[in-house]
Amino acid sequence: MSSIIINGKEIGQEIRTGVATRVQELKAKGITPGLAVILVGDNPASKTYVANKQKSCEQIGMFSELIKLPEDISEQALLEQIRELNNRKDIHGILVQLPLPKHIDEDKVIQTISPEKDVDGFSPISVGKMMLGQDTYLPCTPYGVMKLLEHSGIEVAGKHAVIVGRSHIVGKPMGQLLLQKDATVTYTHSKTPDLPSFTKQADILIAAVGRANFITSEHIKEGAVIIDVGINRDEENHLCGDVNFDDVQGIASHITPVPGGVGPMTITMLLENTVQAAEKELERQAE
Ligand SMILES: Nc1nc2c(c(=O)[nH]1)N[C@@H](CN(C=O)c1ccc(C(=O)N[C@@H](CCC(=O)O)C(=O)O)cc1)CN2
Image (cartoon, rainbow, N blue to C red; front, side):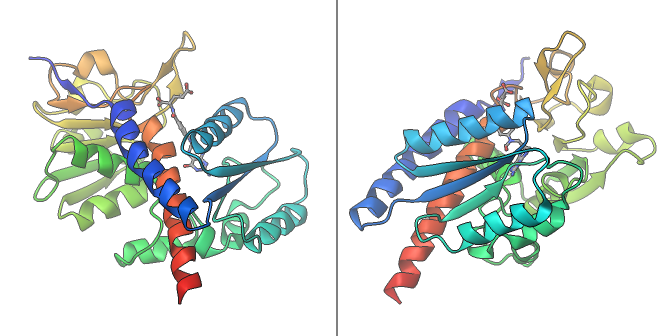
């Protein structure tokens, strides 16, 4: 039996249609949702992601502004740029594309973004609120995964979800969001001994380890839902995920492809968060 392919492009498009309607509603009330994207340096992948974010904003009628800064910009100058954006009325969301050059303290940069405009959901305030289940901006990739599961009719409550990877932007928040939907969550990582003994228990396996084709049939059980968050290049420089798709195809019940799975959802949820930020600003104005 072949696995059901979860199509992130299609699901993302469906969500974007709803977000576009909300943009029109906001515009009718005199507010155009605005996103500022800061790109430091010339990382080719980052340049592509940032260009895609801008294009996606344009497609749904949002305002977006790209701020390109040189690789050798000082941390101080970058923080100053963020403070300026914090004060701009036409900007509802701010994001700094990661990774940043080594000489810049990523934590300091993220903490400088006003929590009301932290549409990446990376700041300590957003993370703390998420942990407490309070209203906040959820980090776009894990938020996107939750939407993929929901739109695919995959029940989370009572399931055993195993996360491979513990990054601040994917692995850790992913487990938290699944826990909030009543999954039993196990975190695994590079120092976990006998990884397959854990991953084979997963009803839902989240691969966020950052190693090309790392998860194979020996890691999964029959009928598992496999969500591949990885974006890697294989030996032939082809884009691939953390999961060896061909090897697990037919064993998994559902699987996300790379490209076309989780990736497009990351940008979709960024649009959703930015529109939410503009809606909250409108509410504040009305108070
Ligand atoms: N400030 C942030 N930086 C980074 C984030 C983030 O959420 N906020 N996540 C990643 C990069 N990223 C968004 O920024 C991102 C990665 C991948 C995709 C995507 O659509 N991937 C496509 C394939 C694209 C390709 O051809 O390379 C797919 O999987 O289908 C979107 C956004 C790190 N930095």
